[in-house]
Length: 161
Image (tube, rainbow, N blue to C red):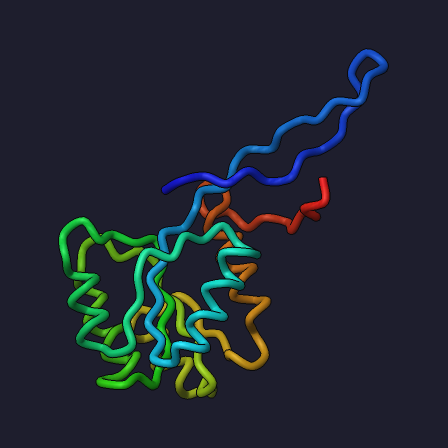
């Protein structure tokens, strides 16, 4: 994992205002499984702007995702999966990725995040399920929390220093 600097606190030291650095957040090596190029591009831009995420690859279908994830050296901290893909499904990605070494956490981001589907995804190894239309902020907060020290939840900090 790489690192990204968080904002700093201003502290008074011997009458001078100085900045105290906070510990850096680790960049989450993230793989995206999303068949819509427009949605994928917007998601990548938002994640890389608002969370400590480094997108290392993507696929639009189940077979391509599992092939990439199974390749030695392609370990990732987080896989974000849509349920409906060009070929196969996000459920198949979750099922297949469970057995792969080097795959960290898995999150589902879908427009079809019903209670029943959430249960199915969690049973197949997803750590979290987010609705595309209402829970993007929660996904970003989840990424920030994962990148914190030992994956501990973090309190959001304004970036205006």
